[in-house]
Image 1: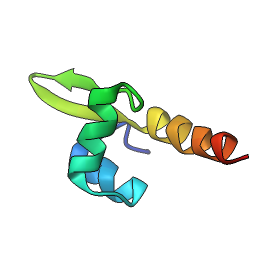
Image 2: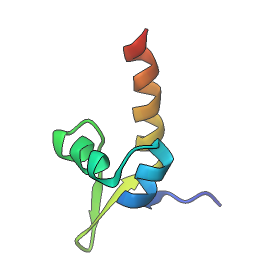
Image 3: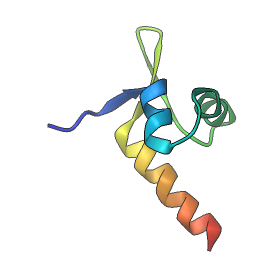
Length: 59
């Protein structure tokens, strides 16, 4: 079974950017996130949607 939620550091690895850049993307609203008991997480589907949106912006 695929994981549904990723820690910020894991999301950063997935995207190939720094942890601070990932937090910047979340703060700006570009990358959605959720809180689980005060811990910030990024949904797997939101990571895919974000990456797919980069391809359309570059075109």
